[in-house]
Length: 93
Image (cartoon, rainbow, N blue to C red; front, side, top):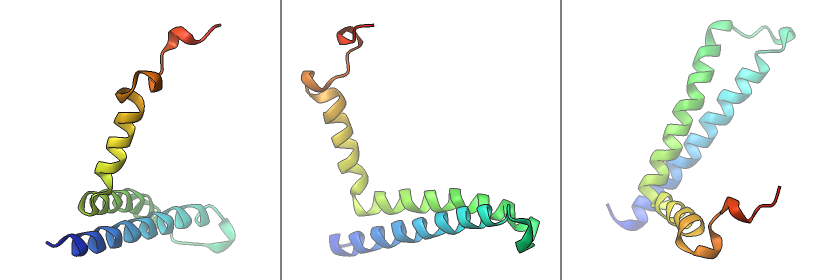
């Protein structure tokens, strides 16, 4: 897969995952309102869709290459430079 296609596919999966998560959270919240009378059997599906959306998001990040950048930044920030390390000996209680 070419880089441009991989980037478009990954970004599309990330957007799809975000939409699925937002719809799942929205349905779960709206289901708590008794005046809407939404079916109770779809609550489990809505909660499951949050996890499916997160999985789609992670797959999209992996395909588009965004996961490597954030992992590298986290590693460099917390463990790469001695000045950036969190050291509990500097905190006075």
